[in-house]
Image 1 (cartoon, rainbow, N blue to C red):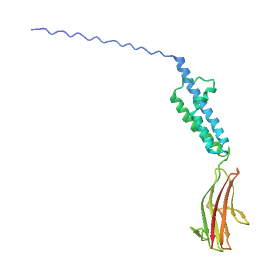
Image 2: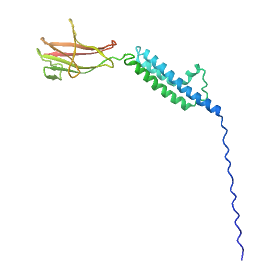
Image 3: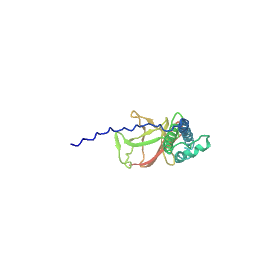
Image 4: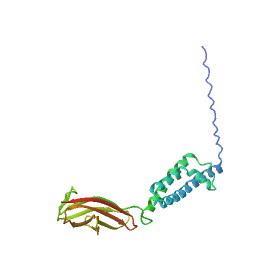
Length: 220
């Protein structure tokens, strides 16, 4: 009877972990360059936000274009600084560009509003005309010798200085509108002659910004 061969025990290969070379100085320099890129990107964003605010009087589109151009050319702006950016990765620049855009835009918006400034015109909305207690849907059928109230919503990002009602024509007349209990501005008058009347409502804020609304009515 044949004898079974003895199974020789498997020899396990020993695994030796070899740590990769790590240049701590290179790692720290790369990390420091990335941090500097973020910080100076924020500084550039603040500067561009201020410049955009200063150009608001020319046109808001110019300020927005400056911010967009700054975001796309951010990498090249660093050439004027004594900073080594060769180790900063492309994905970091993309993130910095996005941060730059929104931070500059935020600075611009903050400067446009009180208490820093006010370059935004007031808004006039929802003009209503009432004849006595009845709201008129047709401005071409305003009744004669009846108390007619012009009612409008005026808003501003700061403080409104005045809201005025002006009848246009050969002898224009102007009245200050008063604010009612509902928070809307109103002026009441009586038309004693049947005719077409052109009028204008002007809202002015404390910074001198203004908005006008011009309409006409037919008194019959």
